[in-house]
Image 1 (tube, rainbow, N blue to C red):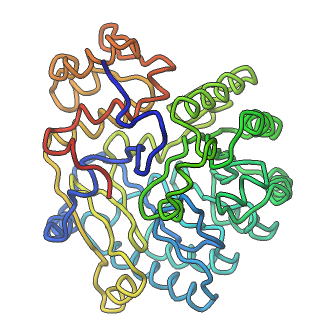
Image 2 (tube, rainbow, N blue to C red):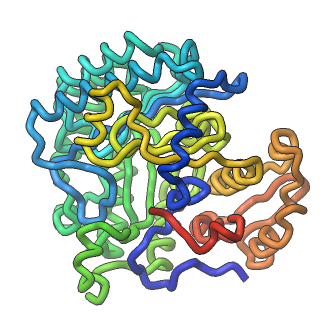
Image 3 (cartoon, helix red, strand yellow):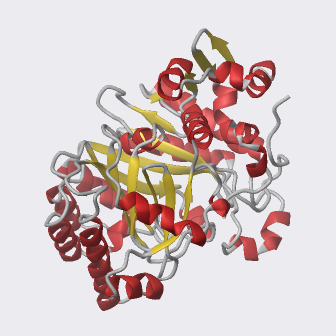
Length: 437
């Protein structure tokens, strides 16, 4: 039977699978592979996206393990923005990038909305001198409510943001403060009034199920408040306690009764949220998302990446993928900015993947949508996934988490809510014991 990769109790570590092979297999001595890929004309019809990492935050959340910086002054931020623009300028000259249309753009972090409106306009103006995203189908921008102002939101609209993602996480001030979030509930509602008045094509609200201090009553209140705001989409993650976080250094938190919900409780809360959202007219589109109108509302960044698109990962410690090669930029601002000052791409580690790894990558990521089409993999890879991975898919169906009918695997709700725990068996043997770092 398929079982969770962890005990029901929430322990330290990551459960969310974002890529394949695991990041721990990406190595510095493989950087030559991505340098070569940048100088090679890519295959035709492969979509290209752009990710821009803005690593600044007002505070570091206690559960955050990303590369972020706090208490940074305006001059240092501008220096980073200048370096980011320089990186784009270098990339634009590469054979693999030159002349290609940017199909989707994602400003992530950190907190992209930490930047001032003037800095945002200046950055985008410089970027557009070297790359063209006028025809991008989606431009996503992550926001922390307390960093927003009416003028900043107007600037986001002006630079072409189509999907605003608001990191609400929870509506309880006590829970927000306990988990180290920078904003409080009043800032959510203040920002929401501005957002609705200005108008964006899509507005997404992020929630986290099972934050430290979460209760059943509070969770139900968070879900109802979200429904009352009526965003175009809602993203819900289950709380994890990664290594290299403040909570990881406060091990006593794991032994305080009721402080951290167990996995079955978190899954139940997400199920209850999905049920309430469906009753309110939403459609569940993946293990983490519900959308109000699936014909008008999408997650193009996600869907393109999960179907093998190229991605320019720019900014300190950012991740990218090009022509079958995974890569990550160097870690640390000084190193990142120093390499760009020398007109060098700030590449830190890489991993070229073979056809089998590419197949597994797309298969496990697309499974997070709750279904798979075997015909897609037959056409793209020349493989019969249900027979080639008969044992692994058999575990899913025999455990009652999904069914196969012809070319379609369909996960039920129980399977969807635990999908990340069902993915490692599909890994190649050498990758199963080593997870994400």
